[in-house]
Length: 147
Image 1 (cartoon, rainbow, N blue to C red):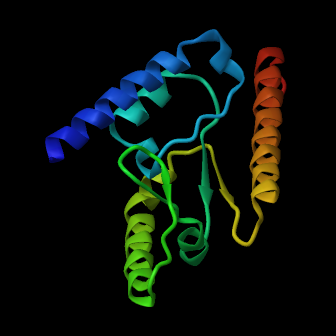
Image 2 (image 1 turned 180 degrees about the vertical axis):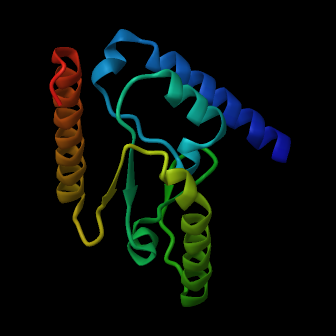
């Protein structure tokens, strides 16, 4: 099964390269899994220009947003038991610890703790726009020789 997962990630990374090479991808947002700044995904992102942002939140908030799907990607209504919540929370914390070093590769990190979806989206958009403005100003300064 591990080989199949690895193969699927490689195929997804190839699809990401294809997507990023399209002209319309110059002004887009692409959400990736936590492993998005590792392996094949990272190689694809390094080839493209753009801003990478990691969206972070508290483990308890992530747990509240978990949704389950069947094999055909149809949503499943599932109420977690206290024991299941504890197990999922532990796994979320382990994932955050595992992936946090790869998150340092991003241009910016945006913490959305305690925000509703629209507030979180606005915060990410504003952070990206702010960084983009700084990068554009830096590029203009370098072109004119001003610092």
